[in-house]
Image 1 (spheres, rainbow, N blue to C red):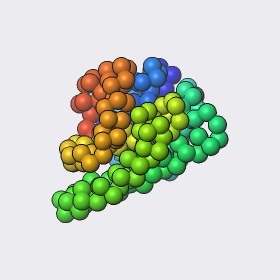
Image 2 (image 1 turned 180 degrees about the horizontal axis):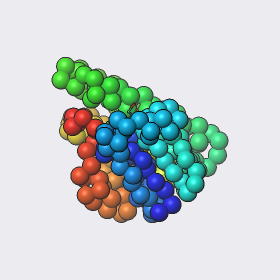
Image 3 (image 1 turned 90 degrees about the horizontal axis):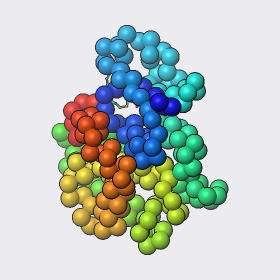
Image 4 (image 1 turned 135 degrees about the vertical axis):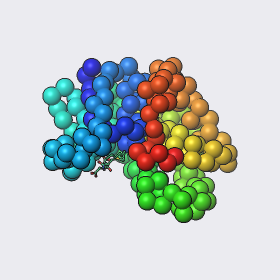
Length: 209
Ligand code: 0HH
């Protein structure tokens, strides 16, 4: 395989890159880190910011999940056709990161007491993405430009997680709803999403979803 993911047993911060690699026909291998391995401390010391995931492209090692997505985007031409498109793709991806951080905070720090308020705020938080989608080709294609980009994989992954958290969360957003179905049914991506590699891997590391 050309790539290696070094991560805990979760979809977490790696599922968007797994979806990207599967859809692009790239090969990767998983180095799964257990909490016992992590407690030993050597991996934490070796990590640039003391955290996982780590990622290898041949002999090149990288940390920070969004940097990994961008490396893959540059390698597989998933970063727009000019600097303006690339910047819009960054804008979408930064918005995905903002919502992912809120989601992770709720999941890991306040699931029991925080889930209801989190779900109530979703129409506001997801509405931004519905409008972004509407502004590009009437929402019929990708979030930016005429081709898929790394931001599409990251957004669709985040939406998948939200559909597990709150199955009706897209009911007021017809474009997002059709977009998730359309992207998820790309043949190679659909094959990955229906494989055990995806289905059996927990969304988060604490069993909450
Ligand atoms: N900005 C970084 C990035 O995007 C954030 C990395 C991060 O938060 O790459 N890493 C966390 C794990 S991701 C980390 O290294 C979420 C948890 C997944 C499963 C958890 C299982 C835990 C078993 C020990 N956390 C460990 C640490 O900080 O020591």
